[in-house]
Length: 246
Ligand SMILES: Cc1cc2nc3c(=O)[nH]c(=O)nc-3n(C[C@H](O)[C@H](O)[C@H](O)COP(=O)(O)OP(=O)(O)OC[C@H]3O[C@@H](n4cnc5c(N)ncnc54)[C@H](O)[C@@H]3O)c2cc1C
Image 1: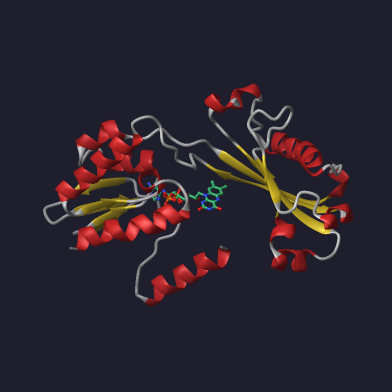
Image 2: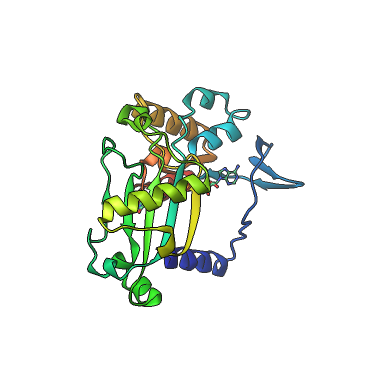
């Protein structure tokens, strides 16, 4: 997966595309010829605009230009935190849970929603880690009370997440994982990730698409419209962009 991003960046650069990493679009406005995107002290003009940010951000950027979008703003998805543990634990060579587990929301005493035994999943990582050393990744953040998430308050700070990861890894792997086994660890947070379909979603998507089609110079793409996951997004995005170019 990480090689895909490098390959995509290389292809875009070879096609002469200008990429502005770490640059936040602050506003989007109509101009006589199309659109102006402002970021910091810079402004970028274009005849056609593809907005590929998550749903709440996309609606926030475009509401001044397209007030009809305001009522189609989706709920933000849950905040997801990934805790990666690198452990010296030869007992894990036996891959006690295969490549990992998904945790049912009602599972008593477990806060994680998934565990990936990364060195069991990817041979290249196992080769780099070496014998007896393992990489285990735990995922936190269901954010959905309907699925019982409120039954267990979610860990938030790095320290809370680390403690929860040790406890949950021990339970899920049936191998005690203690602070003394840790070679290194890290937390990565994904804010508002994982868009989901609330009631009336399909109708709202159709309305957003029809607002874009009526405009003729704008496409909105991403998981909040196509359905979450790369397969859905990669299938949908070229269709939306082709319509813009036709
Ligand atoms: C932990 C995790 C694991 C996942 N694993 C998988 C998996 O294995 N397979 C799979 O298919 N899917 C997976 N997904 C889901 C997948 O990542 C999403 O479906 C996909 O990334 C959504 O793509 P998107 O383009 O809609 O939005 P995003 O990938 O969220 O991209 C939107 C981007 O817009 C940026 N942005 C927001 N506001 C602005 C602004 N004002 N200016 C500029 N940029 C802005 C954001 O920083 C972000 O980079 C996973 C998601 C998470 C959180």
